[in-house]
Length: 347
Length: 275
Image (cartoon, rainbow over all chains, first blue to last red; front, side, top):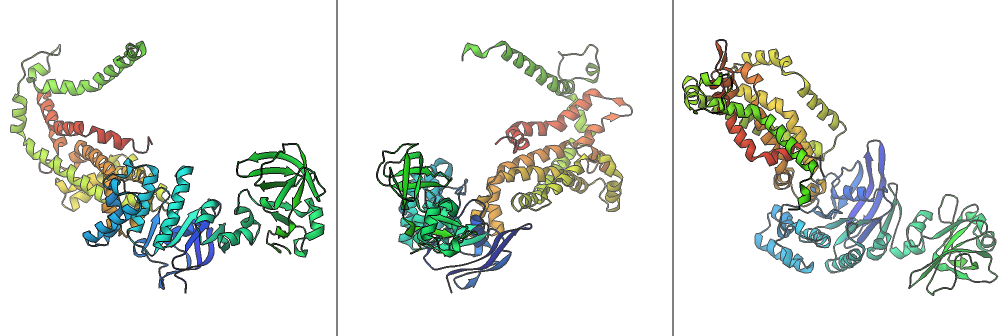
């Protein structure tokens, strides 16, 4: 049995079924990321695991023990909140030692653990300060420190980086990654940022509307999305998804039988834009975004299809130029009318 | 300071503010003056502003009726009812602020609505209840009535102040292994201290000033300072100077108390009003 096992977990808010029977196995030491658009239930699912919300159906087992109805305080999990949720009336030291004090751990051991965590997180010189005397990034580190001193069975992170500015977010993301590598602790991390999901996760769980859409390693999700939702959720810029009737030339060549009436999905890097040529798809440049390392070219075709192409070279193209699109149809994803994948990477 | 501060508008506002303040203070000031006059000076026309102050009234009030006895009753009833009220209201407010139910707003409105009812409406039943349980003219009767009548305000104030505490902080405590009791004592109470203090202060003042129930349920034995003052307006006529002296002695403790805690009081009354 898996270390943390979710079986048919359900949650109702009034009559609304927010979590619709979720099954998930998480192994010891894994870094799992829950990702999805807002309102998909990812935070609710985390709070159900944390015991901060009551589980209305299904069972939750941790390390062989049924904890479905156990109160948060008895689950041996630690959580890092989006708002940090530090105790404002306590110093950094007291914040980090609070859980151990409640557990009546020997003060010497507490001191050792807090000092150790403070060293790892570069907080040693701030131990006597109160949270309001710290910057956002430092508060975030205290929140993480509060979690690691306890050596809990599972770390839960609820969008921990969304209150930080972009530069600090990237830096802290790397720190969390290193921390997980060093501690090897089982971690569940909720985010709406797919870059965080891709960079941190061993496995990503994509949620929509209280249901798991797909579970897999970051590259599995990128290369073999199970449906159009996952395909478009993972990757920036988004995968181009175009109705088949707008690209008849491609359909004639490649489309698998099941995709009739459906859509074709193409990653921006699988499309190259040429100034001229005799490819089956031609169009006009709407916009060029030169990002330095890469260039994004937005093209629309006469029958209404819109594409984004990504290339590493800079381009001399401008808005309004007529171009032809060289599409690597062997890399295409085909979706049926319901958005399910028909035959990804058709040979 | 820059000269531009003294604009005409500023001057007008200042004068108006002083005028209103003086107007509000006048009865209290007059009370203060009258308490140190003789009975003759007190009813003199035109009113005297300059006179030789006397302490005779205070002496007589203590002689005729035991001031300290009534003052003690006031202290006991207001302090005990406030502490009791806080002990009941805090858990109620905690439950509504952090464990939302569907009927919370209705319950809060219902509680507040009980304050709208004139106290006279409940006089007979409560008087009979007090009589049947032999609580007439006791401190306990007033403690019970004060506690119950202040509860709605206490729950409301504590509810508003607790709602300012981010719920994640309490959840963090729970994740850290805190039991409900530890969550309340180690996190909620320290963070809610401001709200508890101002709620307590307000109810202390309300109980101290309460006159209706004191007059109707108690007399010489369990009476508070409110009953003491009332005893000076007798059918034989008003003794202005003694009445003033008694009133002054009755309000002095709470005025001093309120003076020192006004910051907390004002803060408590504006919970949730400013973010």
